[in-house]
Length: 361
Image (cartoon, rainbow, N blue to C red; front, side, top):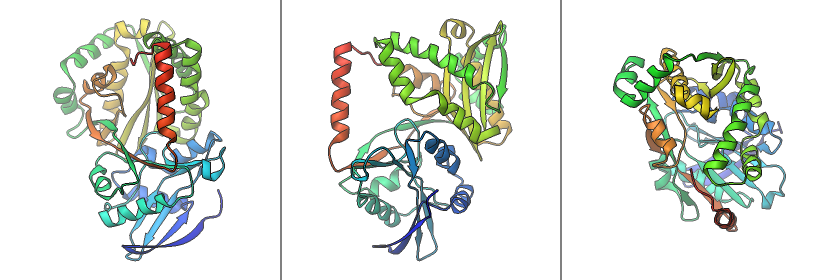
C-alpha cells in the first residue's frame, strides 16, 4: 500500500483533513462501530478488488474539526492514465460501496464528499450508496452528478428463523423447500475455498443457459460473463474472507447441481453468487433449499439481515428473491463524468443487442 497522503480542504463545514489511502486500522475501527456497514464496505473487500490487478486503493478518510470521521471506500483503475481513468466505490459488478460513518452523516458533510469527488482529476467518479442512506445523498448531490437508480433486496431477519419462515417466506418457497428436503439431495457448506472449482463448473453451465435465454452467441456470453466474474475472483474472496465466505453446495448422485456463496460481516449476511445445472437442480428445487439453510444459519448467528443484492425490477430473479421475503430498498449510484463515456457505452451495447436480437432474461 502506498504511503498515505495528507490533504487539507476548506469546506462550508469548516476545514477537513483528507488521508488517502485510508489507514486500515482506522477503516476497521469505523466499520466495526458503524452498525449499518456492509460486507462490501470492509477493507477485505477492497483487497479482493485489488487482487485482480486492475484496481488500486484510492480510499479517502475525512477528519473534521469536530472530531467526526467519514471513510469512503474507493478504487482507481490502474490501466488508464489518471485523467482518462476512473475512481469508483465500487466498479460495476462489485456491489454497494459508499461512506462508512458511525452515527450517520448530515447533509453539510455529505456535500463535502460530493464537492471533493467533483474535484478529482479523473474522467469519471462514481459512488453506489447503501440502502437507508439515499435520502441524505439525494439532498446533498450537486447538479453535476447523475443519479442512477438501483435497489437492493434485503430479507429482514428480526424475530429469528421461525418468524422468517412463517411470516416472510412465500407459501410457494416453503413448498419448494419441503420438496427439496424430500429429494435425494445432499448439502454441504465449505468455508475453506475447497469447493471453488465445483462452483465454477456450475457457473460455466449457467453461462450456457443464460446465452440461450438471451439469444446471445455463446462465445460472446462467455467473454462477457467471465470478464464480469472471472474464475479467480471467487478464489480471491474465499481466501481473504476465510470462514466468513460460505460456499453452499447441493449434490445429487455425486454430481454438483446447485451452489450459492454467502458472505458475512458482523450482523449482515450477503447472498453474493449462485450457479446451477438447471436440468438437475430445478426439478428438486435445490437453490431454494440452499437459501433456506443459509438464512437459518444467519439467524442462528445473530444476523439482522440477509442481503440478496440487486436484480431487475419485476424480473424472474426479483420475484425469486421476494419469495424469501426480500424487500427492495433504494441504493442509488451517483456519478460525474467529464466526457459522456457512459452514454456512448450504453449506446454501443444497445446497438449490439439489436444486431444479435438480445432478450433480457
